[in-house]
Amino acid sequence: MPSYSSILGTGSYLPRRVVSNQALTDELAARGVETSAEWIKTRTGIEQRHIAAADESNVFMATEAAKRALASAGADVANVDLIVLATSTADQIFPSAACGVQAALGARRAMAFDLQAVCSGFVYALTVANAMIRSGQVANALVIGSEVFTRLMDWSDRTTCVLFGDGAGAVYLQATPEPGILGCDLHANGELGCILNADGRVEGGQVVGDPFLRMDGQAVFKQAVSVLGNSATTLCESLNFPLQSLDFIVPHQANVRILQSVAKKLSLRPEQVVVTVDQHGNTSAASVPLALDVAVRSGRIQKGHHVLLQGVGGGFTWGSVLVRM
Ligand code: UT7
Image (cartoon, rainbow, N blue to C red; front, side, top):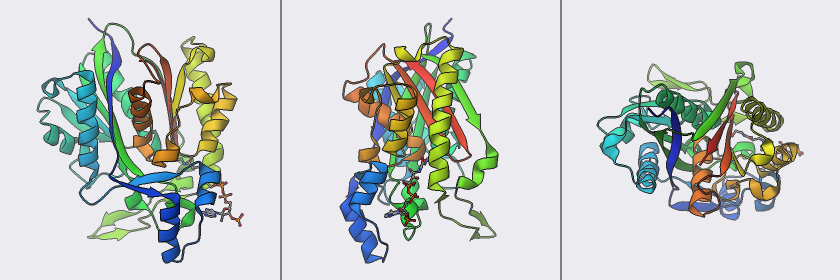
């Protein structure tokens, strides 16, 4: 009786429209917002981002990523028991984006729900799916991160609007006799909710509160470096897994300087850190599965490699999942 779970396939989708720092800077200048391609590149590492068109909904992107994960695993959609979709930018209040994906895929057997832990959403979703597989409740799961964060941007706020992009990533997870997922470590501190939030809601037919994403960038930066380093150490120690045995880390892609600081803290070489923030910007819950898919498809991450996936963001939430691919 299999009692572990393993990632058997990965997939991703990026919107067709690519916007370089220069193109974004020009667009913002036309609105009277002053920034520069150089500032964005130097302070964040971002060079471009993908921005979803009206027909590239959260569900559409998630479905495309899921199809690619199923294809790379050689899996049949009819066998999917569970779809967990991590997002903070679903297309509608309800039904969930996961149910939209279930319908679009024709995954009739699957239960489906969304999970909201902002930029930590994917590691939270992977932890939940892993637990459901380990308990024997399901055998085959699609775990997806899909976001259209550009729809939450206040385009007059240069401290946030240059940072985010859209996209989706997915993994196909299956029950296996050997792990797979070696361990998970999740945390939250709701007292820090105010440093990264979008506090608006729909009430009485109107948006009440601030509908845009707001962030205290420096506070988030400091927290991120500290908690990602601690989570990696805690998880590896609890599993008796030496940090030196890690092949790669795939952290949440918010700022290349955060990734460099975490790598330094963990004494990892730069080439062990998967970086896609330069190409994708910050895609919140989609960033980790997107980066994982890029690294797998390029042949960098291979079967048998030990990979640490890490999320951090609004809530405040953070966590790590250690995987043998
Ligand atoms: O996904 C969830 C996780 N999110 C994150 O991890 C984000 C974490 N935070 C960060 O990545 C960084 O804090 C930012 C990229 C958001 C900001 O970088 P920073 O080096 O912390 O910049 P800062 O906020 O200290 O601002 C430095 C200066 C300020 O000007 P003054 O006060 O020194 O004159 C800002 O007004 O840069 C200015 N600035 C900009 N200038 C040009 C802020 N945004 C921009 C901009 N273009 N877009």
